[in-house]
Image 1 (cartoon, one colour):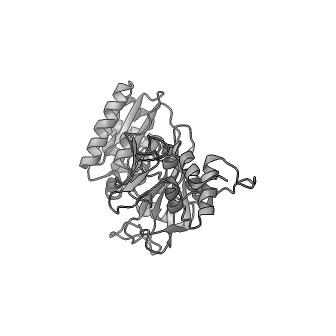
Image 2 (cartoon, rainbow, N blue to C red):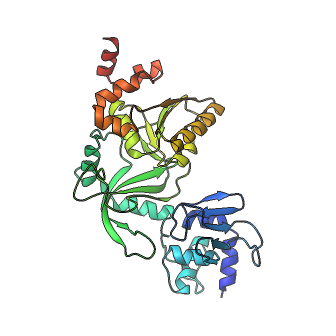
Image 3 (cartoon, rainbow, N blue to C red):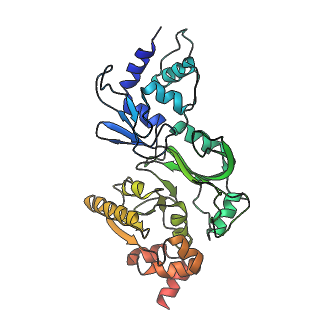
Length: 352
C-alpha cells in the first residue's frame, strides 16, 4: 500500500500544479507559491516551496503560514482546502489528482476541490440565466439595462458564503460571472453577493457582508468577456465598469479582469490592433494602465486609455446616463472607432 510519505512525495513532484488546483487565488514568485492562507484567500502569508528534493529539509511541497505558524506538506493542503477529516479521504483525493487507482484497484471518485477551476465550473453550471432574477434587477439599478453579450453572467439564489474559516457557512443570492482564458475555457468564477432587500445608496445592491465580492479558480490572464473580440477590445477592472461603457458603446467588445493586478496581466491576442484601457482613477488603476500600455506597445498594439469624468464609469453612467457617457467617450476614441462603435444616433450628434 502506498504510504502517506510516498503520496506526499508524488504530490511534491507536481507542487505547482497542486497549488494551482487547491490554492488557486495565489501566484508563483520565484521558487514559491504565495497565497493568503489555507482558505485560499489572496495574500502572501502562506508560502509553498515549489522546488527541492522529494523529502527532507527544504523539500518541494513544504509550506508555512507566517501569520499563524502552521506548516505541513501538500497532503495537509488537500485536507484543509477540501475540508476533509479522515486520512483515507485525503489519500483518495490525492490519488484522484495524481490519476492513481485506489489500493484495491477501484477507480477514485471524482471530488471537486474547494476554490479550484473544477469547483468554479460546477458553480457556474448550477447557476441560471440572469433574465428575471435579482441579478438583472441589481444591474438595472446600476444603470445597466442592455444585457446583450452577457452570456457569461448567471445568477445563483443561494450561493455559499463563509466569512472566515471559523464561521458557519451562510447563503446569499449572487451574480456569478465566468472567467475564461483566451481559448474560451472557463477557468474561474467571480461572485458578487447581492442584497435580497434590493438596492440602496449605502451598498449599491451588494449584500451587507464583509467581502461581497470574491473569486475562485484561475484568474490570471483571463477575465469576464462581453461581446466577440476581433481586432478591437476594451478592458477594465470591474464587471460594472465594462458593462457601463457597453451601455454607451454596445458594439465594443469588453473584458473585466476583476482587479488592477489581473488587468495588468491580461492576455493580449496578437490579432488585436487597438486596445482601450478603461481606467480606474486611483493609484492601483494608474499602475495597471502603465504596465498594460507598455505590454501592448511591445506587441505592436495601439493602447488608448479611456478616463471617466468622475471616479469610475459606472458613476458616470448613473450620473449622466448612456447618452452623457457616450458624449464623454466620443472624443477619446480613435476616429475610425468612433465611426465604427458609436450608435447611429451618436454619429448624428457628432456631425450636427
